[in-house]
Image (cartoon, rainbow, N blue to C red; front, side, top):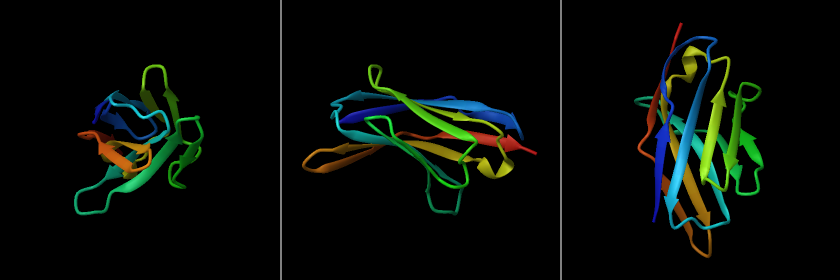
Length: 118
């Protein structure tokens, strides 16, 4: 089992910045992918960004050049630096961990609210 604890959400004005963190604990399989997804009530959860255990990030087009995803494998922690925030970035952000073993195992955090005011 893997436990994910998110932090860093909050309220910010448009154009501002926030940094989200996700700390993983438990049975951490070394080959994995971590990521952030977001969801607005009534809509599907969508990908924000993912990063492999070797540090290669991938971003949704809507956040490219504004968000930066990184991870510290020694701390089993992932960081999402969000700059130039827009009202449409408002959502609950969920941390995701996928262990790439013989069987894929997926874990989710509890979510953290990000609200961007105009």
